[in-house]
Amino acid sequence: MKNFTWGHGVIVALGCFIAFILFMIFIFPNGQQNSELITDDYYEEELAYQDVIDAKNNADKLTEKPTYAQFPHGIQITFPKEMNNANAKFSFNLYRTDDQRLDVKKDFTLSADNKLLIPAKILAPGNYTLKLHWVKDKTPYQIDYDVVWK
Image 1: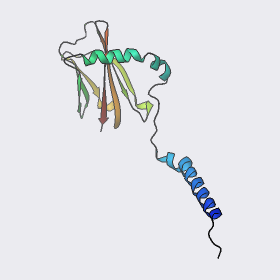
Image 2: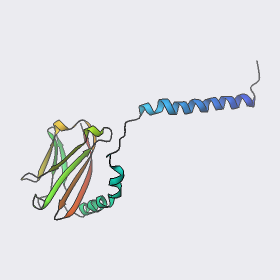
Image 3: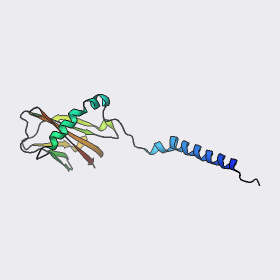
Image 4: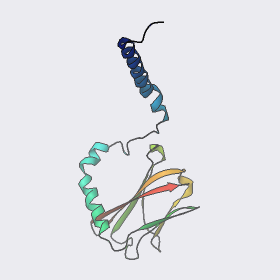
């Protein structure tokens, strides 16, 4: 039997390194979740991100913020009493990070009791980012919530 020399060690180390690289290329990515861009216009929206920062800062200054609650029939968003449909425009975006086809985007008006219901029939189980946008008296607001719909 031959003696194990440093040359054999180099060959074994190189073989292990090649096996590791092949594992990382072919096997490891198969277990990863799909992660799509939030929007197709990602770069254009990034340039206008200061508007989003301003809207979030405006929302942070509110004493009472919109809230959401989950019910079997859907997600209910409740706005404070001082907010109403007069001089205001409301919209929401529900983003799915793993499947863009499940995104929900909609403009809406508040009901008489300042609520909005996102029905369960348009939601698939999974993780969403709920982005509430509204403009009241020409001042933009935005609040983001992480939602897990089961």
